[in-house]
Length: 379
Ligand SMILES: C[S@@+](CC[C@H](N)C(=O)[O-])C[C@H]1O[C@@H](n2cnc3c(N)ncnc32)[C@H](O)[C@@H]1O
Ligand code: SF4
Ligand code: SF4
Image 1: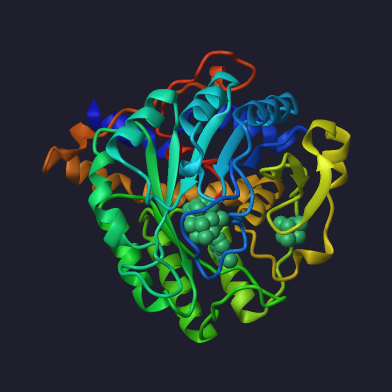
Image 2: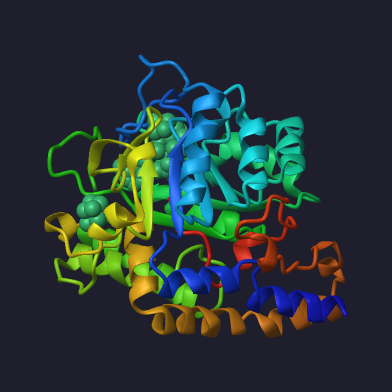
């Protein structure tokens, strides 16, 4: 029975049906909401924090969330700045779940405690992304396993699905293999992705040798094809490889339509790079649909969540088909584990709460969202 549950987790997800609907209708799939601009770190590659402004009040965040939900958005990704700095983050997660959002939170993990994770879990948080760039700190980034490794234990019996994401650049590359191996060895879906393109030289980092970066991405593709828990789809790995080779990729950007961003001042942003002064409260479905077009900034675009969602909506069979093949390769290992160590007994079964995800006022079951084939786009 446990074995069947765990095989089931490889192929099902609580929101597959609703996500599938968003692939064919005109409503948005995902919104990333900046719950604050403030941050406790200053990663050299980041332009997404500003400590000169206060946290937005909870009452404003709730108003924007209601509007985002009214537009039909299924999933909310709480981002920043550093979301755990916001004093009302637990209440905010609870409200997201009351509105019926599938809810994720991206954090540098520095402020994560056992109690904070328990509170977020109790509020209904489903997915947490912890950003880890290196094993040890450097002048470029402090987001390392040195800080995060001792905290992984908090997730042992937690219903919150954890995944780890690192940034790949000149500074992190020598430790990226270790980052990936460390996450995967603990059964945590892990991914390392190229630092965004920086045409205006805002970042204080070098991208690194294209040859070395290509080798690393190819190695991740290999591991993905072997069925390991690389936390991204093959289309995005191929896309990053094309970026490095300078080869064009055919896609149509759905940012501003199927996914969009809302700033910590309540402004509608097409993506993290393309900002507008429009108030989210004034945005209509027709406004969103206008963004369903190829965009001048597509060449070299590094907003991987937008590329990923766009490719999924454009070619769901291709993207999901490859994912099914990759996950199928995990089944023999599950069988071996089940009849070997018995370790899988500790893994929770997957719930299917699709009926709760749209329009319900009740929180959906706290399923392991990471396993959804139409998973959370990366941030
Ligand atoms: C802006 S941060 C906000 C959440 C939180 N402070 C954190 O670092 O996880 C969201 C994600 O974007 C990533 N990120 C920031 N700047 C980036 C860049 N220039 N290229 C690629 N990823 C970047 C971060 O590493 C993190 O995983
Ligand atoms: S990446 Fe996250 S932790 Fe680093 S400076 Fe930006 S917002 Fe802060
Ligand atoms: S192409 Fe990239 S940068 Fe341009 S709008 Fe789309 S996601 Fe944003």
